[in-house]
Length: 271
Image (cartoon, rainbow, N blue to C red):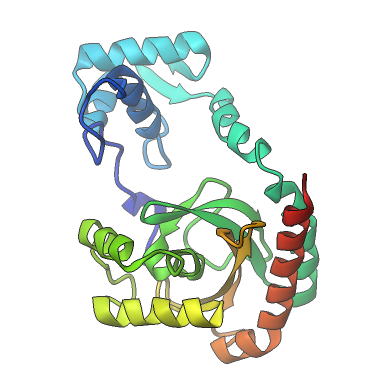
């Protein structure tokens, strides 16, 4: 069963481009230091930051002191931690797009109707990132909120967005991020997984039944911009013991599609 403790530590050398004229290494290292703080390491010593980022102690110290001077990090004794000001970086992204303000009241109304949680997410590499969530009851062992990441390959919103990619992009993604079993239901065979994405692309929606976590069933549809591009996905998620996959498709899919169409229309009308 997945949990936040299973997420990898930030690594300054992980999947980064080689330094060059267009690559600012010091900036990349600063971001690596910020990413090294997470749910399992909210407070770190200088040595721990250096170990989690692959930086020297001297390099980590310079970055931490710079971040502290800018107000993004605070220190108490030997321990460093992020400050609430770090949220400004994420808020700049959310406030720069009209989608989230438009989507929230529509999603709130949907949650009132179906009595299940509703979320919106965007694709970032091999992950989906939650940008909006209207919860009902806690149904997962992961504490989900804005900014939370989940693997795209075995989530309904992830597959909805991955279904938009071409074959070469999908091959590259699973080559770099092999399909991983999270439950006994998770699809790990590449051919079967690609066939599932093709089905999602054709039908325009995705159902994932207990592939990320036992007992979790999720139904997702895309949100599209005026060019028809899927810029996000939204889902309804519930407990399989209470809401079967069949019931979710029969009862919730039309409402979810209507909500998505409403958000997409408002987004397309936005100047």
